[in-house]
Image 1: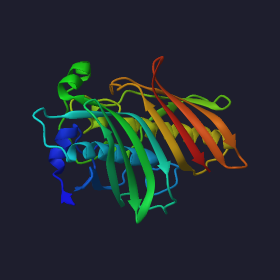
Image 2: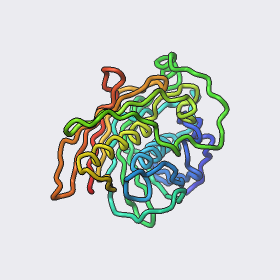
Image 3: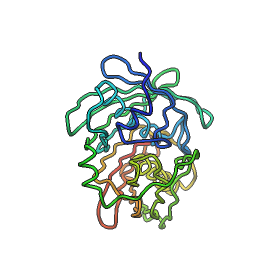
Image 4: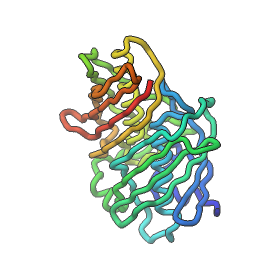
Length: 286
């Protein structure tokens, strides 16, 4: 293994701290990268040592690190990796840990060309306990800046405090049957700190973490009590990069419910006005 220069890797994947939270990166032969991070996002009612959305955030970033770590630095500076599809899968039960606990992750490239990347990764605490499969659109810096020129907002100086330690605030409509709608306000650019510098946009991982709030709320409505649960699987399809200046609404429905099996499946359509920007399918065990 060889230790990687985090500053150089961050420059090449267009992601910085605090969104990028690995404290150590090492390269392993066969286009594999290992990293260490500490948990920070709130679990809410989710069981386990780390929120599944936070696991997705770190593992997706590590996949993009693996894409560049074994390549010579090109003349063109940055590649922007936009996650378009992802599947989170629980592998094993792991006991809860205190906030700030350290975890190891490993990612490998499955396929890569000039425009796309496919990677997979695992997170471990003694043994692997979750897996992420992720597909990305890869945009060169000139292409990204041209496509998203209207998103540009110069970033304020970053602070040590990570905005990802707090959940997005939501306003909930009253649940109707097996469905629930929640609405966010626009995100302040500082809430996207480190995610595509100067182009504040809703990070996919933050969208998924917000979906978890609506899923929890609807689950508790259906059961008429607050319960904890385990995310067994979560499938994401992201269709657009949404500027932080635009609010989103989260339309969640329970599509499968078995009290006997304690098994529930929820689908959330993430909307920008009348346009679907992402869909999330979450499978839970209560």
